[in-house]
Length: 522
Image (tube, rainbow, N blue to C red; front, top):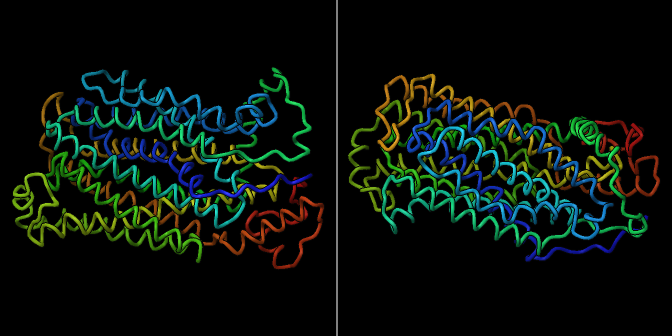
């Protein structure tokens, strides 16, 4: 099979494709950082109702995530795939729909309204996310170029999170309305427009895997309704087949350990600030901004660490940093530093305006440590993801970027829904009560605050440590990836034996399969 000319990505392509994470991470930063707080504080919804709204749509995506991945993989030799692009057709369809994000932040509506609008946005979001995630793996096979794509993506992701956290401060300072729900509606409207713009950039500045000369000779396939009826069967077969790849199973533990810990923290933290640290929306916004700036710095460092040492070392350092931050928040709750509340009140909502050293320590040190760790936790899984289709190709002889993106997004969303639902349920069972519509957040009982703190501190620690232990023997790095790609090229050329005993061991360790069963023979 003739190999198409290799197209080298430039900085325009790195940043053009990476801009998509303004939607990918920006939407999640708003949702996980603000939506539970918005529902409980301004909409009169209970913690349990909030958890159901945030959790149920993700469970429905057990079908939509792998379906979109499977369909986009299988559009390659259709008219749509040839003329528009099997990935880009989905991206283009989302552009006019994304401003609907603002509908979620309209106050005074019913539980059903918020559930339906959130389900709609999550479907549109997924329709973008899965095809977009495959493109970096299709644009290059080079380890360092893939690391650059992941690094740019994460820098834009953290920048979008900074915007999501600081926009309420800008809106309040310029338009007024301290602790007003209109702050969040304006923020969501701004993001909705930005989302459509960045998806347009992705369409223009990225490309799909080029067709080989042999593939160009394949005639586009007409619609086959018999094959269409088998899509669910084939989809779930491919879905579960990804779990047979050893490196992918280990990668999921890194992914879930890092991201679920953040889901729990993001859901509980604004409520922690509002009740334990006596903060307003303005202070919550500034603390979250500080955290996301630290995350951006962390990503810049993690890019170099992962290229040189691999992901596991970076992951362990990140867990240490986040763990230290959580223990400091726990210490704050237990110690209740004298004079802290008065010091915060004197700041009049501006934590950057200067304060006594003791107040500054508790405001900034824990949140900066959390941000430094979280940035790396965000980067590690997506730094690794771009290499997984290469591992899979050694086993199956196929390129299945779409199904891997579908499985990751499905796993992420189901786990996220479970994490948010469990977090809000535990907080609610602990006695935490929402604000009546149009009224300030109610005074909480000591038992309710204790439950909130235990969930915010204990939950992330448990899942991070579990992820680290499961992934302890993860071996994918620059050296082993280079060996893998070389052996895949030899398999494609018809080789039946590994070039060396060492390369055989490396490939078998990454795939979890014996050499004799590779390349579709198993």
